Image (cartoon, rainbow, N blue to C red; front, side, top):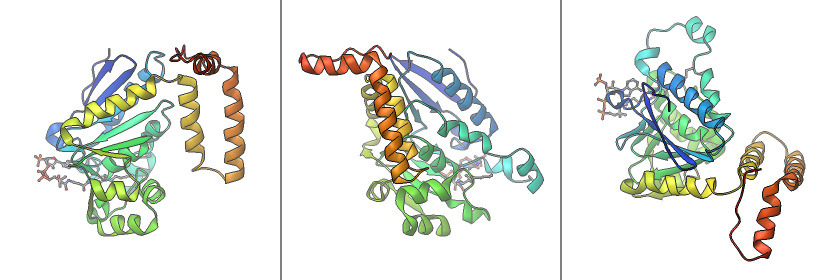
Length: 258
Ligand code: CO8
């Protein structure tokens, strides 16, 4: 198990829990956090024992945004040449299910990081927002694109242009959040959801994730064709035989992830 400076990584059976751990900065996302999360995801993606990952923060903040102090004095060329924040694409490219468990502030880059995950569970204390406009900039880690796809133009414009926060209930109504849970039960619930997912056949879970993600990138006709092809491909797995045989034999399936 690797030690990290700004995150904690724990494993429980087939599920891993990544906890953002910069409490003094409300988990603001600096280059070290990016480097730690990327290394953890590389490790977990290559680990056949891991079937799903939960990403969480603290009770007060999932993450209060990109680290403003790190960006404050940078020039356009500094940002451009280093492709500042380009590295966060690693999170969206993670091939196994990633569940964001959000309590407290998920602002700016924090909200964008949560939206890079596949499923977003919110504590009743969660507050989402894209306040970058108040800093004289705009969302830069996907907020203008992913928030708009998640909640539609009207609410995305409202949040991005005014910089106001949205509570958990509004976020659920708007379709950003899949479930709201009491804050004290947030991580346990997210771990249960992850365990359920990790108990399925890993190839089918990874292909299901890829198929849903494809719907954001393509036309309906192409998306349906992609779904059918990858659906067919699952008939090459031992787990399809096991899953369907177990149903017919009225017993639980015992997947081997092959
Ligand atoms: N960056 C750096 N430090 C932060 C951040 C942040 N985003 N958020 C909080 N902190 C620090 C504070 O500076 C403070 O540090 P210190 O004790 O040294 O003064 C500590 O965390 C605690 O914060 P507060 O005292 O402010 O705590 P409060 O409970 O009073 O307030 C808030 C909590 C409301 C969350 C408040 O901290 C806040 O407004 N934070 C900033 C929120 C924000 O604007 N986020 C957006 C950041 S910009 C961004 O994410 C852009 C992403 C895309 C850029 C793309 C570029 C290519």
